[in-house]
Length: 158
Image 1: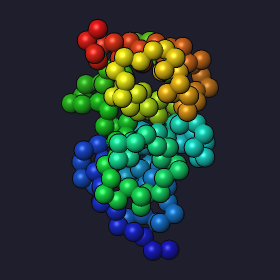
Image 2 (image 1 turned 135 degrees about the horizontal axis):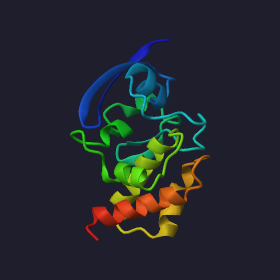
Image 3 (image 1 turned 90 degrees about the vertical axis):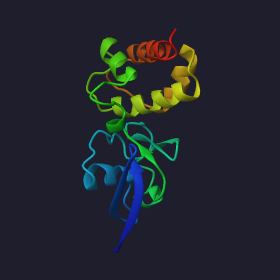
Image 4 (image 1 turned 135 degrees about the vertical axis):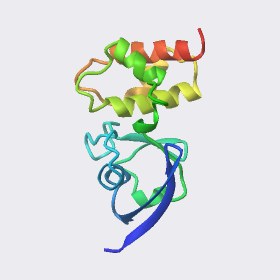
């Protein structure tokens, strides 16, 4: 099968890669670009573990083809921290013990960042609704919700 050339930006850095036309963005990130922060949970778009943003939209990277990324910016968990400093969401997840095994955590962090970007003052109900597409089998969600709400408060200076 012929490979297709893709040019994009990932976490604000220019990237070019070759991929099969039927290869998922998740596979490209993990296997072609060695960006293993994005996790595969289900491979069917049901768990949200592989969540990234593509052209500003939250997507399950297991449901998007790598060739669809051509010319569209991607944001992954690897781009969340900056200059060696954790993003406030990452810090709050640690402070609130909002993670255990870590498979779901990158996708939840990406989704939570998008929520706060669109709604800097979410209610608990809104956080639960927004993160409903991200499944976690370890934490019971309460610590995750607390971490997101605390991060939102800090990010808006409340």
